[in-house]
Length: 341
Image (cartoon, rainbow, N blue to C red; front, side):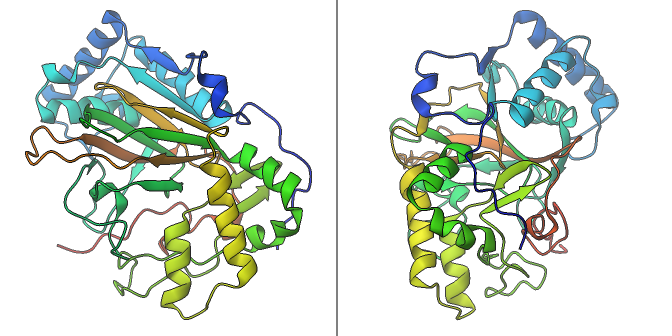
């Protein structure tokens, strides 16, 4: 077992939600000059025939906005753990052009990895009829259901809001450092459970394709490595993995999972907000948990709530312990195994 941190965490990623009721410094409004710079990058990419998934930042040259991307990335990696670019005029662009702009921004941040067995690098987060509440193997991003606080399987998650829901769909972020300090105060006896971790259910998207495949090893909920505390939590796939392999959770393991969920959903810890149309949100998956409320799904998919998501591994990655890095049985920091067509 790796070292267990038995002291409170400090640093800029330690915060509580009420701090951001008046502090809006995490929102970066795009200027007209920023948008024109992105449009120049778009024009260059189109002239070269580049398409999302294939081009690098050299195909998407930016005169000034690249510096703003670098500053935002620093906030996400080494600061509070999240930030938003606000005001991309999505209604002015064809979907294909929007994806080029989105991919171009991501190309300045790192490597995009696969999010599902189809190999999607930009995936729609919208209601496609999945049932996250009742179906064990369904993915939450394809449902309209409430998503509990969790992390994604990448250094960073990017979300571009194309359409909002009429009712619901509120986003929520919680600092895992704040959660850790609360656990340390209330139940330090559970630390060993969190550091030992849990198997994760791969829901039929692992290399074997089996619906009962789980991670090779237990993934720690908390991992302390080279002076940095990282978190990995998803209560649904932790619970279902142990059911599938017939290794029942102990009473204390269930207690640990439930306690972290309770703290992460507490109003005093959460930062709740609506993503506006044209927002691009970036989340550090090692220092934040993110969640979403259920939303009302419009029968017409053309107006239904829709976000575009990328999973990114950063160019200067956070150091991680070996037993913390392989979440899909595809190797360190690997994405979802892609099935042959």
